[in-house]
Structures are given as C-alpha cells and as structure tokens.
Image (tube, rainbow, N blue to C red):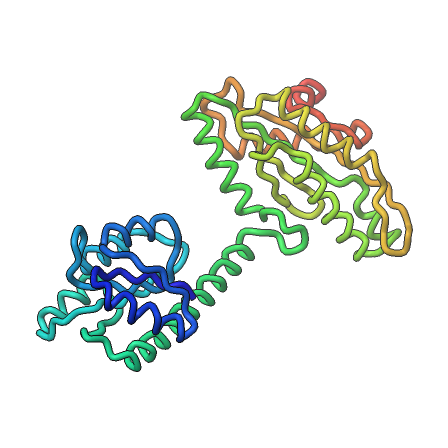
Length: 308
C-alpha cells in the first residue's frame, strides 16, 4: 500500500521511510505541504502521514484541503505533532485528521496505527466496491447488461433537456426482435436468452460511441441518439438492422438461427416543446407499422403517421 509522507525534517523522513518500507508499505516522501498537495492531485494515496508544522502549507491546512476534495478512495490521515495540549489535538481532529502520532515517533506505535489505517482502508474499499455493484445492478438489465428501462428513460429525459439547451435534436430508435416467440418455441428459452444477449451486444457495437442503449422490455431495445435528426437516426437503426440480419446466430448445438429486427425511429427536430413520452409513443407506433408492413425493416414516425 502506498503512503505519502510529508515532513520537512530530513532525519524524520529517513527514519519513517525506512520503517514504512520494512513494514511492507511503499512510501513517497515530500518535504512540505504544498509538494504533498501537488502529489495528491496527481495520484491517489490511501494513507497520508503529515507533519503539523511545515513551510508553505501546514499539516492541518493540508488535511482540510484533502477533506474538501474527492479522490478515487478515502485518504486516511495521520498528523505528526510534538504538541501535547488537548486543545491542539482537538484542532487537529477538527481539521479532518484520523489519527495522531507524537514526535519523536515511537516506531512500534507507528506500525500499530498503520495496521488500523490499513484495516479501515480495506473496509472502505470493500464498501465502495459493494456500492458500485449495487448501483450497477440497479441500473442495468441482468440478462443483457444493457441499461434497464428506468435508467434509459432517465438518460432520454436528460439528453432531451441537454439538446434543447444546445439547440440540437434528440432522436429515438425502438427496435424489436422479430418472431421471438418462435425462437423460444423452436430452440428453447435458453436460446432466446442467447439471442437477446447477442442482439444487445450487436447493437452496442454498431451505434455511435455517444449513443445510449437499453433494454426497453421483453425483446425490445431502445437507442437514445443525441444530436441526431431523423435521417441520422434512421441510418444508425438501419445499420443495426442490417448487421443483425447479415449473419445467423450460432447456438451451442451448432444450430443456426436467423434473426431480424423491426424498428421505429422518431426525432424531436423542429419541436422544442415535445416530451419524451411523446417521442416514446411515436417510436412505438412506427415500430408497430414496421411489423405490420412485413418485419425486418425500419420505419420513421412520419411514415407511420402517413400510413395510418
């Protein structure tokens, strides 16, 4: 584990650095608070050992800066001080320090305090990882690993608001896997799951890097296309459709399954007051028209309205 040690006394630097190395840590030593702050901004250190009195930026001031900043993980801070008064210790704690060590540093006590710091860092890391897993599970579809319906809806609303601010248009493409029930009936539900994952992966690899893809429900997929008019959105959706249709899906039993998609595309272009719900409804209507017209095709909302 890496430790940043900030102390302007060369003797203390050498003594603590050697002790940290023997204890299995990887110390980086700087001579003042400003140098420590610059190093912290450049890379993450889980543990900071800092002297109270230093030129440029003292220990408590540095710790206050650390507590105002978001790093990739928690920075456990140990304040070195020769001050013994209770008021001084309270001031140090109020600055955000996690622990104190009194100078001259007792090396056995230092190792014990670092053991505590390591446990806290490990606990914080596991908690952060657990929270990240929960956040991912809450926002993604478990089968396809795409965004789930609430999340992709939220992104659509956010992108529509952003497009209005920038004077651009937002487009949506709603895609549906054709004859999905027949796939389940002919090859089994496991094959259906494989087909949905395959389609999700193919869509993600075909759309633009800044488009959003989510599973809308069942065998339906939604693409949110920022800064795209109807023609651009149609081109992306058609590229996805042709990519799916061009190559049969190979199952584990060497069976080949031909997959096709139907889709409906709509855009907010020219309509500053259009809502996300209206766009969803238009894309759904266009999708229905594509199904009714024979499947394996993309239709724009304008075509669907004219045909109805």
